[in-house]
Image (cartoon, rainbow, N blue to C red; front, side, top):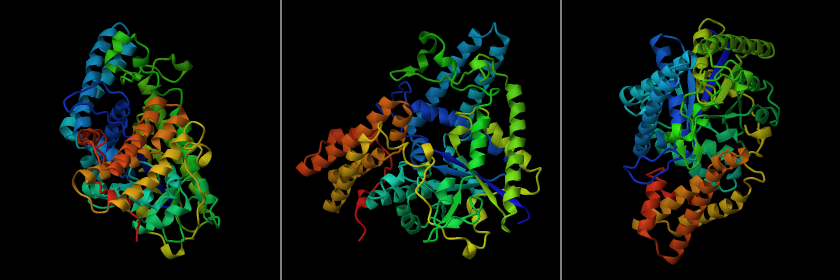
Length: 528
């Protein structure tokens, strides 16, 4: 290695399962599906555009990308693809009315025109450049060695809470394998723990599914036994040989602080929340108002100052330079205490860049362009860094229970708002294993029911529902999602017990909750 310091940028791309199905040809107004559509428009496509520009300009870059199996499924769901185009067409139609409404205000009109043009370009990119296949575009960069894919669990379950049920844990880790083989040719080397939830019971499963490394929150490694001699800036490994990398706590804090600078656009102050209902009828659903993509205000002056895009982009340059200098200073100090090359793990939610922080994807592009000016640093992917180390000399550490949730442990997914889920979920998990053992060789309608029972258990295990309840965000939707999956599972369980299954009801459920079409319920059987 010719460089002195390494940086790894890891982006987790995940959206809850929000598919709302009625009829194949019905383009209903997007409710919670809007989360998914916004993620595509504001984070996913802009990231692809950044990588394309860097590639065309021969700027060196490396990105590690976590793409959850749920997101893989939704990106390639024809019904959702059709509805996304309908959604973006509504944005374009609304933009035409905004251009007319703001014609007497040059500042707002300029912004409206800019947003309108961006949305039109995204529609063209989605349909023509990427041909609605965004995963194929990601795989293009993977095959060029510029992106490393990390695997994750089937439905973004908080794994410490299901780890006592080994059959559910193996299902969460095994079912995604076919998805990664289909879209990326092989199973990734790294496994991303949803919400960085670690418990010691996960370790043998990571090894048995041949994952080489995983990522922890900083305190999970620092409080490990024994304490890591090189802290969070060098790999450790578990007793079973899984390599561990820890997030750079200071880098995460710095990004959070940067993203809310007052000069940046206030994404939460979308015009869809301000205009009279009749003006934004295309973005009104039973759940309430939704974002239109047209936001005219910055974070300054309590959201009353008009957004200045030129000033915001200038600030991106300032913040990017400071971020790089601070990271180099931190790694320089660390290197005084170790002979190896230290690494700063910059792991974030991909939605933070673009969806939550409007200028975030511009920050990523500027980060790589500026980093090319520094000979002492290099962006690397995690496996690229790990396997250039002396693997036999890496310290063995048993990490502490940890996560990236509130206060670093598990209270995001277990408090008074969501604890009711678990008494039902734990019982249902036991029953799923019971079904897999009781009906090992069934076919036909009974096999379809068993496979759907497996889907419902996986959806009920999603950490998205308790997290939304904890944050008091879309609480009715989150509660109904958890309740419906548990109720659907119970209906199938009781139907199998009485030996009667409604074909019509099952068919409708299969079309509504259609994840993992090739699922095999036998994955929930006990290992002999």
